[in-house]
Image (cartoon, rainbow, N blue to C red):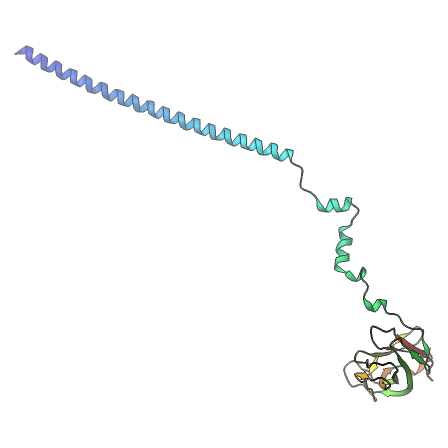
Length: 236
């Protein structure tokens, strides 16, 4: 009876001992696993850091070997071209391409009582110059001493002459200065056209001081295709 009890107790001790051994192994195995995982993570972190370092070094070497970006301003200056001059020329094309007006020519002045001929086949003359008292009608006009000038155009060509853009201007004094146009008395523009074999007249009034009429120049511009006609002389 005692032996049976001993065996039972021994068996219980053996079973308990086996159970405690299994728990110890599990703890050890968990610790080993944690250690392995920690080491793997550390290795992965180191690998990523190394990879980043390698990429950065490669990029630095690539940038060091490539030429710097082109300096367009510097190359333009070294080639002898001034960017400022180019910009100025682009902003002001009139400096390189003169307008038609700058290329227009004026025929030598003829006397106030003379006749000027133009290639288009028209004869132009000043038929009258009258001293009048100018009347201000529109803003900008100033009443006072003026000259009223009548210009006649004789069409001796085979075609009608378009007068819609024809202009008459007057200058006076020495040096010449422009006489301001004024509407009245009796100002009248040219008709639209003058037919072959016909004549057309226009009357124009300009402010001219009485003491500056020793030199008076009248210019007639029929069209941009013809030279400007000029008449010059003294008006008493």
